[in-house]
Length: 113
Length: 110
Image (cartoon, rainbow over all chains, first blue to last red; front, top):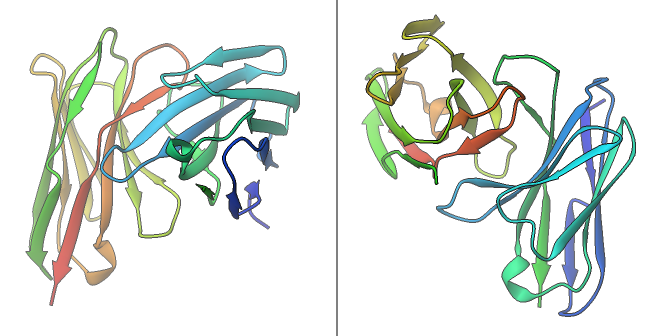
């Protein structure tokens, strides 16, 4: 079984709809991250959480919110989706440490019409 | 602010050597990571340099010069399966938060 899972894997929605993307992990890591990926722009950090009570904004948090329901679960919400939020979204986890290594989920491809 | 620069695309033949350069400007620097991403897949970790010098992991090596704000990933004995995008990422704080470059697409030809 995959260590980091994301649901759904693909989603098409309409402008103005509320969308939730979910991430679960079995790696036992405290740290979790949400990124979006657009062609040619690499990965940009939306939000990150270093434990259940610690939530921080990343580079591009406007229009997004998150919830850390448990150590293993970190959800990303788009309160009112807009077309320029069409992107590939990745969840990632890491240990407390200094390795520079993050473990990524398979991604969610979101299309906002 | 912070920025990372890497070439957008590199093409090489099987068996060749490719070097992907990454220059960075950041406020705070703890180390440089490299990730590989195949089309349709998730990024996977390749290497991390916190200190100056060369780190070797099989056919892949990564180098860092902190004084030059520069690093590179060296891919040796290229194989078709190495066709992918490669991202450098700076670790800017004591946690594992990363800032990614735009990625270099490597195309390996027979």
